[in-house]
Image (cartoon, rainbow, N blue to C red; front, side, top):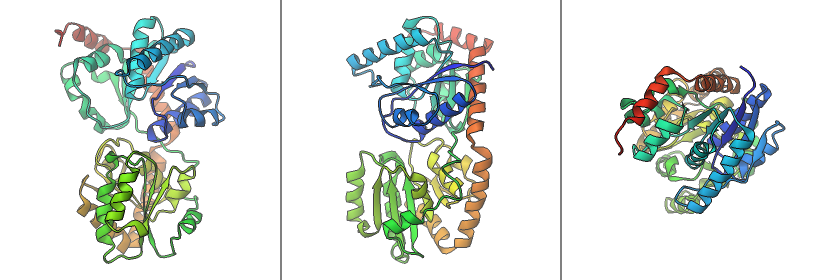
Length: 396
């Protein structure tokens, strides 16, 4: 493939799995000779991209507010139109709702390149089948990348009625940073700083403090575990709007003495390596969880809820445990097994480590993404037929 001019957009200001994928993919694409630009609000993604050492162009003047904030939205459309006309990208890969709409509108009025608009869908959130989304997926998005097969269900109606042709979809899971997350990372300094004694069981969650992450169900499970497992501690690494509410819930359940809220940590690999058991108690959203892959790569036993791609990453009972979302009892049961049988926990963790190394490399992410871009650039008769059928649909 000839070198491509690629624009990645993301509306997030904070850090998470979505921003991490954008950055690691951008770095690898630059390494392979492609020209990459990242357009995002000034925040963690732009800061880390600037300090990555990769030759990534950064445009941090966008706000990417929702269309309801009309003045800001229209200013972003004008900025994007100017950027598209000036840089003439081959591919614009959008990663969130606000930046998708800005890019789609700007492309529609800019004329000419970019030759293809690609949307990477990172979560399992419901996709509304309204007229606006029919226009978006039927007219503007050339190719759809799903980070897990479970996301396809959100597009069932679009697929059934021909708005989206299956040939315009690729499923490409996210990768993890093998240079940061591996079995050699030492978590002992973090355990010492937290006052976790040898022999204590440290249960940890790495992720945003938001309702989708399901922390309350973990609190319920840990509250029950404490009755006959007094030497357990709980760590939450991350920030988010529910921090005050979660701290109050911890207080109400009597868990404050054993719970640590760490906030944002730049040493997240060392923090996760300190865990005896990693938990992802999500009830929604996660499709290709970074936290699951990171824990697996570190060799930490993991319990995750059956959301998005968790069951595809974890073979239940073989490389970890997968439990129903929102089920504190099932979560408690899985944790009890791992606490009671350290040898089994180590065996699961080692099997998981070998599996994640083989399946989720940055190289595989880049190769698959470039194939998706190649498919988008080539187009297809099926895609053209789908778009023609959409244009003939009655107005909704």
